[in-house]
Image (cartoon, rainbow, N blue to C red; front, top):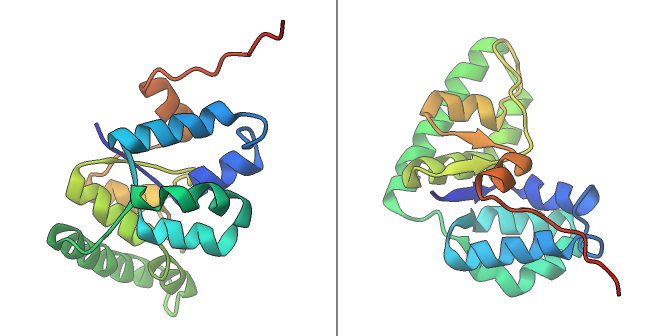
Length: 169
């Protein structure tokens, strides 16, 4: 099974429960599983994090190779389908919807396309907005394309990862 990570997995980990200085095991886990190819992400996510969070970017700089290209033919085809779906579906809900361009201008549609191309599970902290929402969300769009989404805790359970308190002598 391949898991593709959204930028918010890194950002929320650092900003909440898995800070680099408090829970280095989480970041070691990410690095290890990126090395095996079990976890992946895309260059668009790398660029998004570089722009948004300098502290996490320091950790990512040495791991840039883990963030793959979206130039392959299958990803490009699925990206076009994601764009068409989002424009059609969300314009019909609200004309002149600014949320469409915001969504399409980021890494999200590329993540969905890459996940579809690889039959990967997309790991994100976004939650479904549901029918009638004007704002495209990863889980809602993924559902339309048959792409599974999970959150960090589900990923850790799926891979049987546990962080154990280190006993001091």
